[in-house]
Image 1 (cartoon, rainbow, N blue to C red):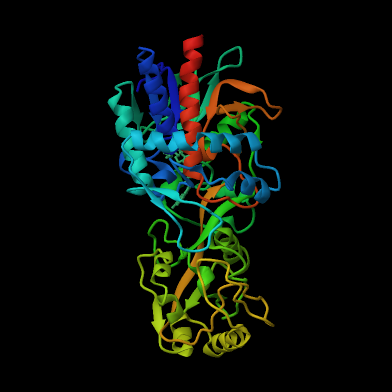
Image 2: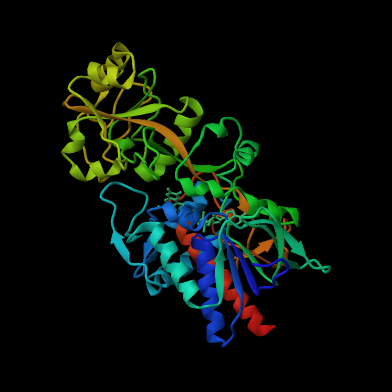
Length: 469
Ligand SMILES: Cc1cc2nc3c(=O)[nH]c(=O)nc-3n(C[C@H](O)[C@H](O)[C@H](O)COP(=O)(O)OP(=O)(O)OC[C@H]3O[C@@H](n4cnc5c(N)ncnc54)[C@H](O)[C@@H]3O)c2cc1C
C-alpha cells in the first residue's frame, strides 16, 4: 500500500460485516464485468484477524427455511422500549434467509439447533460449524479469490478525508511502520466494531467501574471505537444506548474466550460474603444472562459464585451450559465447598439452609418456566428452585466480561451513515456492531446476523450505485 493510492472501495474492518461487504461488492462488480480495487483494513495482525467475529460461537437466530425468529422484531421493540429503529429490525427480518444462504454459498456449514432449555428464542437457531472463525476464514478466502483486492494487516484507520464538496474521499491510515498514509476512495464502509476495547471511551460513555470489565475474547481489544469517532468527527449521528453494553458472567479462572457460565438459572448465585443477590430463576437464561453480568460487575465487586448439586447432573444436557475449560470446584459438604471458595462457611451454610427451607414442591423442569419457586426469602427464586441437598456440591467462580457496546453510528436500512438529522453523508457507510441499534437489553443471537446482513446490503448497494452513476 503506497501513500496516495486510489481504491474504488475501502472497508475498515475484517469481521463478519467487513468481509460480507467485501465479498458482496466484489461479486456484484464481477457480474457487471467490472474489476474494481478494494482495500480491507485490519488493525490486527493476520493471525488475529476477524475481530469479535473470530471468537464467537455465532448463534444466528433463525434458519434458512424459517428465517428470523418471528418473535425477535417484537422483542427488540419491547426490550428497547420502542427506541430500536423499527425499519432496521424489519430489514434484518426480511434479509435473514438471504444472509444465511450467503454464508452457506460461501463455504460456511450451518447446523440447526433447538435450545433444550427454556429460552426467549422460540424456534431453531443456526450455528456455523467452526463458529465465527469459520465465517472469517471462508469469507476472506472468497474475497481473495476474486482477485479484486487485499486485506491490509496491522493497518489502522485514523480519520476520514472529505472532498471540497463534503463527500467522503478516503481514509488516513497508520500502517505497521507507524507512518500515516492517505488512501483515496469514493466510498468507505466502516465495519470496525464498537468501543469495547477502549477503556477511555468505556469510562466516558459507560461510566464508573468500566475499567473493571474483562474482555470476553482477546480479539475485541482492536475495537477501540475509531470508526465511531471518525464518523462523528464529520457529522455522523448516533444510535443505540451509549452507556449500554452486552456483558456476561464468565469463569474467573480462565482467559479462554467465551467461557460463559450460562447455567446460572439452574442453581443459586452467592457473592463473596456467601449471600444471594439475584432471583436466578426470574426468567429464561437468555433473558437474564446479561442482567446477572451487570449485577456482578456493578454491585458485587466483580466476584460471585454459581452453586449447584446432583440435581443438575440428573439433566446431563445442562452440563454443556458451563462453557469453561476449568473443572467445577466440588465438595461433599457445603462447609468444605465454602472453604474452597474462600467464603465464611457459617455464612454459606446459613444462606443455603434458608434457601432450602423456602423451596416449594413441584417438578424441576429446565425446559420451561416451571414455576418451582421459593417463598419467604429475599431475593426469591421464581423458577427452577430445588433444595441444594444432594452431594457432591459444585461451584464456578464468576466475574463479568464485556462482549460489545450498544452505542454506535446512525445508519439507514441501506447501511448509509446519516447525520443526526437524518441526511445521508455521501460516500460513507457503516455495518455491524459499529451501527448503533440496541437499548436497555440485547435481544440475543442477532449481532453476527446483523453484521452479515448490513455488510451485504452496503457492499451490493455501492456496486448498484456505481452501475447507475
Ligand atoms: C466471545 C463472543 C461471543 C459472542 N457470541 C455471539 C453470538 O453467539 N451471536 C451473535 O450474534 N453475536 C455474538 N457475539 C457478538 C458478535 O460476535 C459481534 O457483534 C459481531 O461479530 C460483530 O461483527 P463486526 O464485523 O461488526 O465486528 P468485528 O467482528 O469485531 O470486526 C471488527 C473489525 O474491525 C477491525 N478494526 C477495529 N478498529 C479498526 C481500525 N481503526 N482500523 C482497521 N481495522 C479496525 C477489528 O480488528 C476487526 O477486524 C459474540 C462476541 C464475542 C466476542
